Image (cartoon, rainbow, N blue to C red; front, side, top):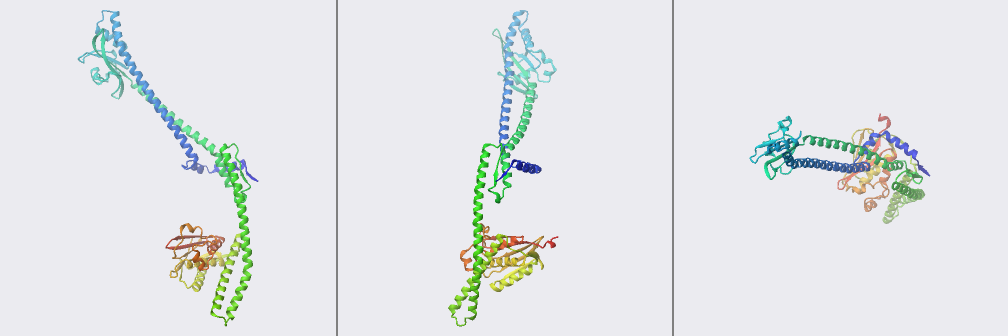
Amino acid sequence: MVRVSKVQVQSLTSKRWRGFPQQLRRAVNPNSLQFRLTVSIAGLFALGLTSVALWTSWKMQKILISSHKQNIVDIGDRITDDIVLYRQMDEMFTVQESVQKAINNRSGRNLLLWVNDSQGRLVATSANLARPTWQRFPSPSTLATTFQDSVLPKVYQVQNRDFVACHSPLMVSNQPLGTLFVTQDITEDQRKFIASVQTLVVASSVAIVLISLALAWYVRRSLRPLCQMGLMTKTISPDDLGQRQVELHNAPSEIQELAETFNLMLSRLSAAWREQQHATERQRQFVSNVSHELRTPLTIVRGYLQSIQRRGDNLTEIQREALEISTAEADLTIHLLQDLLCLARADDGYMPYHLETLILNDVAAEVVGMAERFNHRQILLEPESDLIPVFADADRLQQVLVNLVENAIHYSDPTAPVTIKLKQKEASAIIQVCDRGDGIPLKQQSRIFERFYRLDEARARSNGGVGLGLSLVKTFTEGMGGNVSVLSQQGEGSTFTVTLPVAPELTL
């Protein structure tokens, strides 16, 4: 039993690395399992990481804004306590002086406080209003108009800077002193937050790329046993189906089970293949033996029939007709046996081909003359040039043309001509036999070269055909290094194309 070893797999794998660009194209193939798994898992991971990053950024901004809002609310609440405290410490302070001192004490570089009276006039403001940072912004009165709806802390944007502001009545000992405005510039904090978010985005992107590469490597490594199975199966031929066994080491259990199932399938295929080969061989041997044994007595019978026909001057009309039918049937049977013997020899590899340089025009003209003489049909020969060389066996080529012409005659209207076109294209000689018959259905075009296959049983039987003509055409054509194909459309006829090589010395 031949086993595909790990060394053989490594050798095949090393050869694959030589075609790395091809592997790269295969890796990015949208239809490959590796590409789909990598993209799916990386996409899910990217979606999850992006969602977490967005939620974290939104939550951090909410916390930052809430802390600033809570800060200015606390400052507003403490201003009243500070005013009362300053009055108690020194009764010489007036209410306005106490307010000013409390405001100055609570103000900061980014924090501005001021008090407006009931008429909207500025009563007191923190000392940092004179700093350049606040000088470029509108006056407190103008800002008060902007922030007048901010009873609760709210974020505003003034001159491309962000502020958190609110206002509340200022009461000391149940005596209203005006309205207290508190605003804090949070632009720097916002910029730092945006910078943090950008850093998070960059870090997330890098993480997604790195994890995608790691996933691609891991998926490729996980699917390597399947690739190894593909490489192993490429070395299996029909002759050694039963000797091949796929072995995978360190593969997942599912792939191991797949390999075992594959080996079982190979064993069954091998058994079926051997049985089919034996049956085919027995059939070929039987056909060959029967054809050989029947051809001699049938030839003798035909000779006696022809002799009786020549000397039977005293035969009745019915007897003459019976002799003619018997002779025709004997000729048909002998011709069938000859075809079967040719196919049997070709199957066994004993069909001789005497390849030589021929002029295709001459061979085709001879076949056209014979066909017109025996079938009384119009056959048109249309060569593209006067001399078309072909490298073939004269007898086999003539038989190919005869079978194709007879096939066209049998399956086309008696009044329609059959056309034979000859042309040369580079190193190939091309023969096209065209008829104007009913055409061949598409689903049957792939089977017309099979042995004993006939499109129309009734017509084929009446014309003496048994379904071997096209099979012989295919066998002889391929034996001479060529090929045959058909192009047909129902209602418009069929065109059989035979391609044969030109003589080697003429293709240089």
